Amino acid sequence: MMDWVAIGLTARLAGCAALALLAIGLPIAYWLATTHWRGRVFVEAVVALPLVLPPTVLGFYLLVAFGPRHHFGQWYETLTGHLLPFSFGGLLIASVIYSLPFAVQPFTVAFRSLDPAFADIAKTFGATRLQIFWHVAVPMAWHGILAGFVLSFAHTLGEFGVVLMVGGNIPGVTRTLSISIYDQVQSLNYAAAAWNSSFLLLVCFAILSITYLLQRHFRIA
Image 1 (cartoon, rainbow, N blue to C red):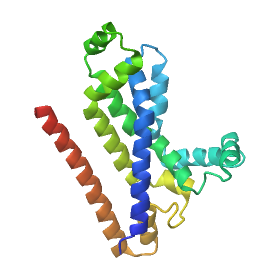
Image 2 (image 1 turned 60 degrees about the vertical axis):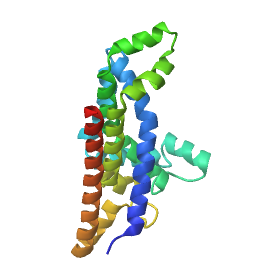
Image 3 (image 1 turned 135 degrees about the vertical axis):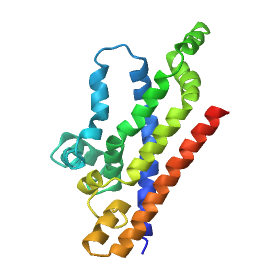
Image 4 (image 1 turned 90 degrees about the vertical axis):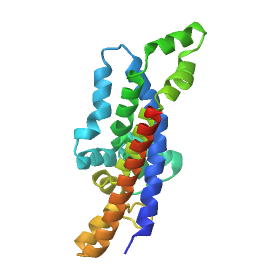
């Protein structure tokens, strides 16, 4: 009853998206936390847009952008020889964009909670902004970074609207667990849908519980 192919694909997608968001989200969050530019509110609004924008709307715009009639889609096809829609690569980019606020917002809160005195002390020893970021800010903000990483991973596990719009439903390629559950319900296979839904629920609950327990343990210690 368990769709292990879809489970494996979903885990790989969530892991790749969380790692990509770690690389992309940390610099964005640090800049948002430290910049004094007034226009940063518009950047914050763009980052947070997936929180309020319907997934199908975001998925539609991404599908158009990834297609052969758009400059980005044409450029990607010229570079790689294939298109992004209905591919794992397209799912990954869409997942990174859709889960961006779930990573950037916890990262930003963690960086803003740091005492600026530590950065000032590092500057007196000649540390550059990049060195302060890697050797001072990131190690000290690890609680928020861990939270953002886990949230983005867990959020990607349950994606549906964006995944369906951009990836469709190709078994072994773009058929994630949420799409598989939808198909099982549509075919009135409620037993299989219940098993897969319960599995996803337990995995997400376990991941979040362990993360919060670790954060609490290290804060008390």
